[in-house]
Length: 74
Image (cartoon, rainbow, N blue to C red):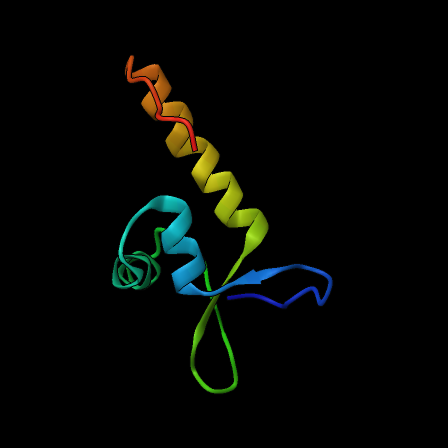
C-alpha cells in the first residue's frame, strides 16, 4: 500500500473479481493474505492498481496455458 500515482486506474474488488471469475470476497481475502496489493480509500475500502491486476492475471493465464489447459474465449 504505497504512494498512489493519480494517473493510475484503480479497480474495485468487484471489478477484479469479474476479471478472475471469483467472488469479490475472494479478492479481499487475497489482499488480506498479501497475494495482491491494495490501496485503502479514506473510507477504508480496498482499491487495486489496474497494472498490478493485469500482471497477476497474465501470470495466471500463462500458468494455465503451461499446464496444457485450453482457455475458453472471453
